[in-house]
Length: 387
Image (cartoon, rainbow, N blue to C red):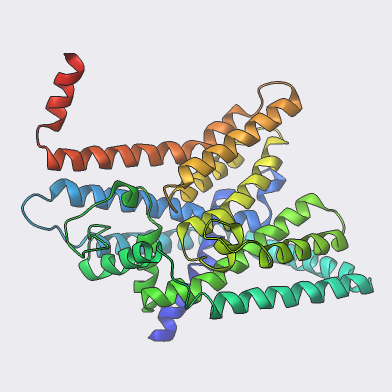
């Protein structure tokens, strides 16, 4: 049973994102959506977007109906419904895209052989590849060994909130400092990563701290370096240039400033936290992907992908609203200056979809909680506006 649960956990980071990503892009004409890395990231964060909406719906119902007693059961209902949605999407993908996936696997194998063949033809490339492999192993070892003992202030919020979701069977409704309930913070409801970590813990039967401090850092580190390789392919045409770029990037991370606000800390020290996933995974991917998207003609599938990734990114932390907005608007301004005209307004709107939804969720929950504390809040607010 433990092996089956562990396999289910791994499927959430392997087969399931691939399946959903291909469902989104299988009819796409744009070449930028046919990259396996793009499909994986699109699938993973689309699933985060689905979980985000379910999390908000159950949390809203939980707090809307809670008057004189605690309303429990929201977390396990959320977990069941999300699991059913995931299973349905995977089955749909097998039916719709199963045969084409086998064909694409052959194409991916050919691309891998060509890449390895290009590396083998040059001794320097082999040396670069060995250096990069050693650096990667060091970072994976650090993620596995060091992050077990790394605790920051955020952990006493993030990890404890995930544990409370499981123990109380409620969604972010326990004070992570005192353990009292009911207690809802709007900034906790405006993200769903802590609830998702709790869901992974239930699916795998691993303890929340094991998921956060042992498993997630290794998996997300590999995902992050997959994105960095995607950036290298975008920036450089030759294998040696890509390898050198990856080596320099790895050394920069390893030798970076150790601060709780630095990219080094986010990638190598706290990659189970939503802010770290945002910094190490989402921001590099979206910068590269948006640069490619703005350089081509408008494609509805590309806009949909940007929209879903943006919403999924905002499920990680409230900080996403700020960083995603800055990133999307910055790319829009750069491309407008480059083209000497307002360019890519639809991609701009797609990229801002996530922060827009997150802002609505935050304000809605804040007003709901204010109404619970002050039953006549909206009546008094209306009178104040009209007076």
